[in-house]
Amino acid sequence: MTTTSKELLDFYKGFYSNEIEKWRYLGAVGKVNNILKLKKGILADSIIEIGAGDGSVLHLLNKAERINRLVAVEISESGMEQIKSKQIPDLKEVKLFNGYDLPYGDKEFDIALCTHVIEHVEHPRQLLSEIRRISKHQIFEVPIDYSSRLRKKFDFFMSYGHINIFTPSIFDYLLYTCKLNITKRKYSMFSISLIWFQFKKKPIALIKRLIHYFLFLALPWLRKRKPNTYTVLCSDN
Image (tube, rainbow, N blue to C red; front, side, top):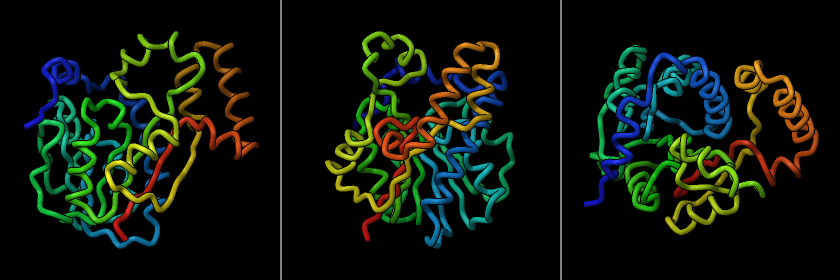
Protein backbone atom coordinates (compact mmCIF):
# COMPACT_ATOMS: atom_id res chain seq x y z
CA MET A 1 0.00 0.00 0.00
CA THR A 2 1.40 3.36 -1.04
CA THR A 3 1.31 6.12 1.55
CA THR A 4 2.58 9.68 1.68
CA SER A 5 6.23 9.78 2.76
CA LYS A 6 7.11 10.81 6.31
CA GLU A 7 8.97 13.86 4.94
CA LEU A 8 5.82 15.20 3.28
CA LEU A 9 3.60 14.35 6.23
CA ASP A 10 5.96 16.26 8.51
CA PHE A 11 5.97 19.20 6.06
CA TYR A 12 2.17 19.49 6.11
CA LYS A 13 1.49 18.54 9.73
CA GLY A 14 1.35 22.14 10.94
CA PHE A 15 1.00 23.72 7.51
CA TYR A 16 -2.35 25.44 8.06
CA SER A 17 -2.58 28.33 10.48
CA ASN A 18 -4.44 31.60 10.97
CA GLU A 19 -1.37 33.58 9.87
CA ILE A 20 -2.08 33.21 6.15
CA GLU A 21 -5.84 32.68 6.33
CA LYS A 22 -6.57 35.82 4.26
CA TRP A 23 -4.30 34.63 1.43
CA ARG A 24 -5.96 31.21 1.41
CA TYR A 25 -9.42 32.79 1.45
CA LEU A 26 -8.65 34.99 -1.56
CA GLY A 27 -7.28 31.99 -3.44
CA ALA A 28 -10.39 29.98 -2.56
CA VAL A 29 -12.65 32.67 -4.03
CA GLY A 30 -11.10 32.09 -7.46
CA LYS A 31 -11.25 28.31 -7.09
CA VAL A 32 -14.93 28.35 -6.17
CA ASN A 33 -15.80 30.68 -9.08
CA ASN A 34 -14.13 28.21 -11.43
CA ILE A 35 -15.85 25.23 -9.79
CA LEU A 36 -19.30 26.83 -10.08
CA LYS A 37 -18.79 27.62 -13.76
CA LEU A 38 -17.61 24.11 -14.63
CA LYS A 39 -20.23 22.23 -12.59
CA LYS A 40 -23.12 24.24 -14.02
CA GLY A 41 -25.80 21.83 -15.21
CA ILE A 42 -24.67 18.94 -12.99
CA LEU A 43 -27.03 17.88 -10.21
CA ALA A 44 -24.73 17.27 -7.27
CA ASP A 45 -26.23 16.02 -4.00
CA SER A 46 -22.87 14.73 -2.79
CA ILE A 47 -19.46 16.38 -3.12
CA ILE A 48 -16.11 15.31 -1.68
CA GLU A 49 -13.01 17.49 -1.58
CA ILE A 50 -9.72 15.61 -1.62
CA GLY A 51 -6.95 17.62 -0.03
CA ALA A 52 -9.41 20.09 1.47
CA GLY A 53 -6.69 22.22 3.07
CA ASP A 54 -8.17 24.66 5.59
CA GLY A 55 -11.74 24.19 4.27
CA SER A 56 -12.05 27.58 2.56
CA VAL A 57 -13.24 26.07 -0.74
CA LEU A 58 -15.99 24.01 0.89
CA HIS A 59 -16.96 26.94 3.11
CA LEU A 60 -17.43 29.32 0.15
CA LEU A 61 -19.04 26.63 -2.03
CA ASN A 62 -21.59 25.88 0.68
CA LYS A 63 -22.34 29.60 1.03
CA ALA A 64 -23.04 29.73 -2.71
CA GLU A 65 -25.36 26.71 -2.74
CA ARG A 66 -26.81 24.08 -0.43
CA ILE A 67 -25.49 20.56 -0.90
CA ASN A 68 -27.02 17.51 0.74
CA ARG A 69 -23.70 15.87 1.61
CA LEU A 70 -20.26 17.45 1.78
CA VAL A 71 -17.20 15.41 2.78
CA ALA A 72 -13.59 16.55 3.27
CA VAL A 73 -10.43 14.44 3.39
CA GLU A 74 -7.03 15.88 4.26
CA ILE A 75 -3.55 14.60 5.20
CA SER A 76 -2.79 17.48 7.55
CA GLU A 77 -4.03 17.51 11.14
CA SER A 78 -3.77 21.31 11.24
CA GLY A 79 -5.91 21.44 8.10
CA MET A 80 -8.56 19.25 9.72
CA GLU A 81 -8.73 21.58 12.71
CA GLN A 82 -9.16 24.60 10.43
CA ILE A 83 -11.94 22.84 8.50
CA LYS A 84 -13.84 21.93 11.66
CA SER A 85 -13.52 25.46 13.03
CA LYS A 86 -15.44 26.87 10.02
CA GLN A 87 -18.60 24.94 10.99
CA ILE A 88 -19.66 24.40 7.37
CA PRO A 89 -23.44 23.69 7.44
CA ASP A 90 -23.64 20.76 5.00
CA LEU A 91 -20.28 19.20 5.92
CA LYS A 92 -21.08 15.69 7.11
CA GLU A 93 -17.59 14.25 7.56
CA VAL A 94 -13.94 15.30 7.86
CA LYS A 95 -11.39 12.50 7.58
CA LEU A 96 -7.63 12.24 7.89
CA PHE A 97 -6.26 10.04 5.09
CA ASN A 98 -2.90 8.75 3.92
CA GLY A 99 -2.88 10.73 0.67
CA TYR A 100 -4.01 7.89 -1.57
CA ASP A 101 -6.64 5.51 -0.22
CA LEU A 102 -10.18 6.87 -0.12
CA PRO A 103 -12.51 4.73 2.06
CA TYR A 104 -15.61 5.16 -0.09
CA GLY A 105 -17.57 3.07 -2.54
CA ASP A 106 -17.41 3.14 -6.32
CA LYS A 107 -19.16 6.24 -7.74
CA GLU A 108 -20.36 7.20 -4.25
CA PHE A 109 -20.04 10.94 -4.94
CA ASP A 110 -21.55 13.03 -7.70
CA ILE A 111 -18.49 15.31 -7.81
CA ALA A 112 -14.96 15.03 -6.45
CA LEU A 113 -13.02 18.27 -6.06
CA CYS A 114 -9.23 18.33 -6.06
CA THR A 115 -7.80 21.84 -6.38
CA HIS A 116 -4.13 22.73 -6.05
CA VAL A 117 -3.29 19.27 -4.74
CA ILE A 118 -1.81 17.17 -7.56
CA GLU A 119 1.31 19.37 -7.72
CA HIS A 120 2.05 18.20 -4.14
CA VAL A 121 1.55 14.44 -4.68
CA GLU A 122 4.41 11.95 -4.94
CA HIS A 123 2.40 9.33 -6.87
CA PRO A 124 -0.28 11.33 -8.68
CA ARG A 125 -1.64 8.51 -10.86
CA GLN A 126 -2.54 6.44 -7.83
CA LEU A 127 -4.53 9.26 -6.27
CA LEU A 128 -6.16 10.22 -9.58
CA SER A 129 -7.30 6.63 -10.14
CA GLU A 130 -8.86 6.54 -6.66
CA ILE A 131 -10.64 9.85 -7.28
CA ARG A 132 -12.02 8.50 -10.56
CA ARG A 133 -13.22 5.34 -8.81
CA ILE A 134 -15.29 7.07 -6.11
CA SER A 135 -16.91 9.83 -8.21
CA LYS A 136 -19.07 10.36 -11.26
CA HIS A 137 -17.54 13.74 -12.14
CA GLN A 138 -14.22 15.28 -11.14
CA ILE A 139 -13.02 18.88 -11.03
CA PHE A 140 -9.27 19.45 -10.86
CA GLU A 141 -7.32 22.68 -10.69
CA VAL A 142 -3.55 23.07 -10.82
CA PRO A 143 -1.26 26.11 -10.84
CA ILE A 144 0.68 26.54 -14.05
CA ASP A 145 4.18 26.91 -12.67
CA TYR A 146 6.18 26.11 -15.78
CA SER A 147 8.17 28.94 -17.38
CA SER A 148 11.48 29.42 -19.15
CA ARG A 149 12.91 30.51 -15.76
CA LEU A 150 11.97 27.25 -14.04
CA ARG A 151 15.56 26.19 -13.25
CA LYS A 152 16.05 29.37 -11.23
CA LYS A 153 12.89 28.77 -9.17
CA PHE A 154 13.38 25.23 -7.87
CA ASP A 155 13.79 26.31 -4.24
CA PHE A 156 10.83 28.69 -4.49
CA PHE A 157 8.44 25.98 -5.65
CA MET A 158 9.79 23.46 -3.15
CA SER A 159 9.11 25.93 -0.34
CA TYR A 160 5.41 25.61 -1.25
CA GLY A 161 5.63 21.83 -1.55
CA HIS A 162 5.20 21.85 -5.34
CA ILE A 163 7.00 18.68 -6.39
CA ASN A 164 5.23 18.45 -9.77
CA ILE A 165 5.21 21.21 -12.41
CA PHE A 166 2.54 21.46 -15.11
CA THR A 167 1.57 23.14 -18.33
CA PRO A 168 -2.08 22.70 -19.42
CA SER A 169 -1.14 20.09 -22.02
CA ILE A 170 1.09 18.13 -19.62
CA PHE A 171 -1.76 18.02 -17.09
CA ASP A 172 -4.15 16.92 -19.85
CA TYR A 173 -1.81 14.05 -20.66
CA LEU A 174 -1.55 13.00 -17.00
CA LEU A 175 -5.36 12.82 -16.80
CA TYR A 176 -5.49 10.95 -20.12
CA THR A 177 -3.14 8.27 -18.78
CA CYS A 178 -5.58 7.79 -15.86
CA LYS A 179 -8.58 7.44 -18.21
CA LEU A 180 -10.08 10.71 -17.02
CA ASN A 181 -12.07 12.32 -19.83
CA ILE A 182 -11.94 16.14 -19.89
CA THR A 183 -15.30 17.68 -20.88
CA LYS A 184 -14.69 21.35 -19.93
CA ARG A 185 -11.62 23.56 -19.43
CA LYS A 186 -11.03 26.96 -17.89
CA TYR A 187 -7.85 29.06 -18.11
CA SER A 188 -7.69 31.68 -15.34
CA MET A 189 -5.55 34.49 -14.00
CA PHE A 190 -5.17 35.33 -10.31
CA SER A 191 -7.66 37.96 -9.20
CA ILE A 192 -6.74 41.62 -8.70
CA SER A 193 -7.50 41.15 -4.97
CA LEU A 194 -5.02 38.30 -4.66
CA ILE A 195 -2.33 40.13 -6.66
CA TRP A 196 -2.76 43.24 -4.50
CA PHE A 197 -2.59 41.20 -1.28
CA GLN A 198 0.61 39.44 -2.35
CA PHE A 199 2.50 42.39 -3.80
CA LYS A 200 1.12 45.57 -2.17
CA LYS A 201 4.42 46.07 -0.32
CA LYS A 202 6.48 45.47 -3.48
CA PRO A 203 5.43 48.23 -5.93
CA ILE A 204 7.67 47.19 -8.83
CA ALA A 205 6.54 43.57 -8.63
CA LEU A 206 2.94 44.75 -8.29
CA ILE A 207 3.16 46.84 -11.47
CA LYS A 208 4.68 43.90 -13.37
CA ARG A 209 1.93 41.57 -12.15
CA LEU A 210 -0.82 44.01 -13.10
CA ILE A 211 0.62 44.50 -16.60
CA HIS A 212 0.79 40.72 -16.95
CA TYR A 213 -2.80 40.39 -15.71
CA PHE A 214 -4.34 42.90 -18.12
CA LEU A 215 -2.25 41.70 -21.08
CA PHE A 216 -3.31 38.08 -20.63
CA LEU A 217 -6.90 39.12 -19.94
CA ALA A 218 -7.00 40.95 -23.28
CA LEU A 219 -5.43 38.10 -25.24
CA PRO A 220 -7.29 34.80 -24.66
CA TRP A 221 -4.93 32.82 -26.88
CA LEU A 222 -2.01 33.92 -24.70
CA ARG A 223 -3.92 33.05 -21.54
CA LYS A 224 -4.41 29.50 -22.80
CA ARG A 225 -0.64 29.13 -23.21
CA LYS A 226 0.31 30.44 -19.76
CA PRO A 227 -2.58 30.94 -17.35
CA ASN A 228 -2.03 31.18 -13.60
CA THR A 229 -4.41 28.28 -13.01
CA TYR A 230 -5.91 25.56 -15.16
CA THR A 231 -9.23 24.00 -14.16
CA VAL A 232 -10.93 21.00 -15.80
CA LEU A 233 -14.14 19.04 -15.43
CA CYS A 234 -13.86 15.32 -16.10
CA SER A 235 -16.69 12.86 -16.59
CA ASP A 236 -17.28 9.24 -17.47
CA ASN A 237 -20.27 10.30 -19.54
